[in-house]
Every structure is written in structure tokens, then in C-alpha cells.
Image (cartoon, rainbow, N blue to C red; front, top):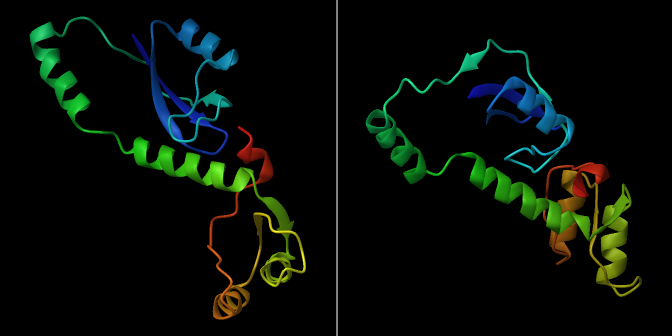
Length: 149
């Protein structure tokens, strides 16, 4: 087994285990590997010292490590679920950009069709919307192209 350090286009670093370095390159090239955090298939191999896992470890020694790894969920799972929920929430919303506060008011006061929107608002604008009874939820800025991957 060959252990390879990988990184997705969003900067999430992780490692992959492959039968050979050729197999690693082939799977990355054909987008058969995706980021465990965000699902991004645009993966590149990071430079690293080669590490080859050998069969010298006996099954008896390896079993406790496998059991321990299976018992403890990795930190990637909550991040992956959060990223997927964020992507799902934002992908169906119209991006109104800097017009967010004005458009949210128009929708709230039935001056525009009801629909899900997203965009940018200052902290003061968001507070004003909340004071008017218009629900807003601050979220990180996610580029449109990242919502479709």
C-alpha cells in the first residue's frame, strides 16, 4: 500500500491509500477520488515523502487499531455534513448580491414574489432586517461554482 497526501481545490487536505503510486495518479486523474469533507473531485497530489505500508504487521497487531478507528468517527464527518447542508440550502436560492437587504424587504412586504434569496448584507443591515421581523441567517460566502459540485 502507498499512502499519498492529497488536497482538494477548496484546500482540504487528506490522505489516500492506494495499491501503488500509479493507481493513485490514475484514480486522481480520472476523478475517482473526492474530498471526504466537501465531495470535491478536483484533487491534486501534495508533495510528500513516500510511505509504503507493508504487511509486516501481523493481523493480531493490526486488529485493535482497525477496531479503534472504526469506533471513533473521524472529524471529517461533521464538516462534510455541514458543507453538504450549506450547499443544499444555498443552491436553490437566487443570488441577489448586494441588493439582499432591499430584496428581502420587498419579499417580506409582498412587493416581490416569495422565493429563497441569498446575498450580501452588512451587519447593520442584517440587524435592521431582524428588527423589522424579517428573518435572516448569516452564512459564509460560498462561490456559485462551489454549489454545483
